Length: 429
Image 1 (cartoon, rainbow, N blue to C red):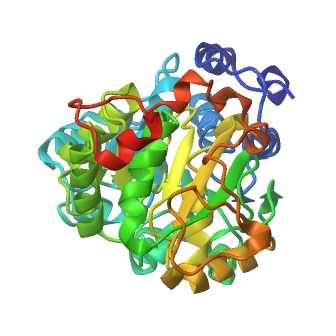
Image 2 (cartoon, one colour):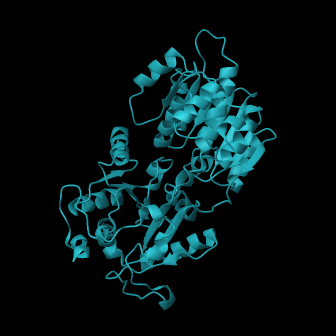
Image 3 (cartoon, one colour):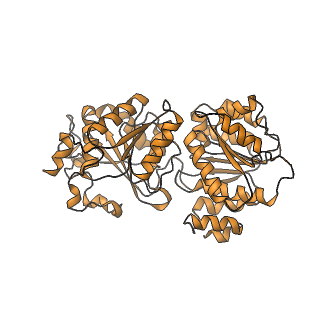
């Protein structure tokens, strides 16, 4: 279905076309018409399915169709997100899609100066994108009035509950008018989400475009068994030997992210880390450098990386498996977005076998194991899963032809400051 068939205004269609889109994704095709009719929405969609545009486009049209008569623009649409990065990206989408409409938008989140946010709110805002904590800070300082909100969006609601925002959400709901349109988007329909929806939504239209907890389509997944002590060595080898240019790597801890980033730098791979202890300015710069290619490897914790929107990201690496199985699905959903192919690589040590089993139980399938030659773990894997090709063997490359390395690209590439670890250089012998 094309966007022209969804009943969107000419100004929105023009903005969508300039972004390079013509065909609506399944969640957009279902959600946009329903939202335009004024229905409450309960939508489950995996990351990378186009859900931001699914609520942003109809929200813009709804507000533009009923302009505010107040002299000082009140907040009429509130979009809540769990993280700063996601808030910034949603705000960017609102601005991009609404560029030809006379609506004002702003974004507020913690970790940055509150003064510019005061100024933006004083000027008047139609659409406000916010994280719960900073939003309540503004309410407490009486710089924000939510009494005229007409539309509420909870984006990645499951993550907000995971991060302990339920009490903040309830406080915010108490500040909103009873009569409003509610849109709840979540990666899964967990019991907690259903309870939240029951108290929030009015006869919602339920939309589900992917099986709950299923991994994103278009993502080739592979497990590389390896000793814990050799993970960093194997990661550098894979990046160098396969000439990976843009790699998002997940660790469990902030300290681990910093340490790994520093070690990769010593291996000659330009790297940066993002996590909750980094200032917002540092996180924003690291992400911008990664997107433009000046940083080759971005090492992140789950919270910092949730909601990252990176066009055509080719590789995600689980340096350490997550403790919560559902986070595996969210992690690998950073790649294979909007119909593009992607590869998710997990470096799994013997200590992580239980975590791997839990992930496979969630996915309801066995993940492929491939031992990289020279990095066999001390405890051998089963013979039926042991292979000795390089990490991107031709048979598996058929799942992502755009990433297939040529014979010359099997050699290690130099990057960053030109340094090479001995373990990286060995692939060129």
